[in-house]
Image 1 (cartoon, rainbow, N blue to C red):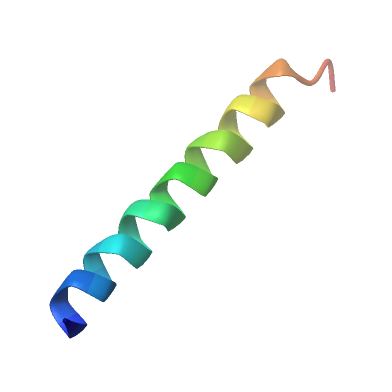
Image 2: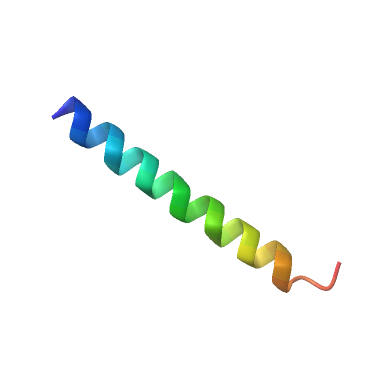
Length: 29
């Protein structure tokens, strides 16, 4: 269970990072 939770956490963080990068890329500044 701990291993699965770690993978889910990493996956969720990765998605959030990608979303942040996309948001920054779309920003005119």
